[in-house]
Image (cartoon, rainbow, N blue to C red; front, side, top):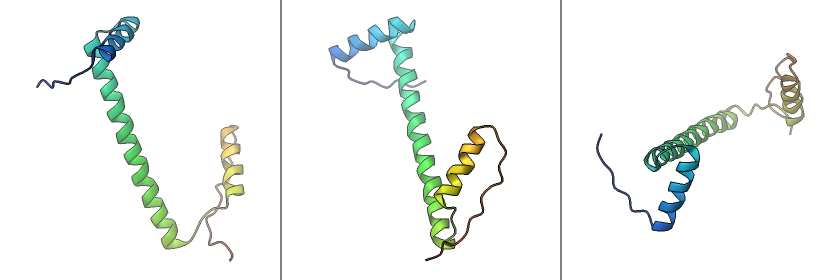
Length: 94
């Protein structure tokens, strides 16, 4: 595995060492885990934005949507363990 060098000020280095010790990890392992978590969060956020943009484009093209009160009632029923019928998307009256 190639090596990457990063410069960390002494104060942050000490904080990393403290947190790593409490977690029962080496500073190196803590840094790798933290970087991996940050990259995963950024990738998840990018995927969410892509999906939101795709759905927004579909909504703008079709003009069809589910009113919030119907969507909310559906989601609340699902959260309560019920199996409600999915609300139908439609073009709202203007």
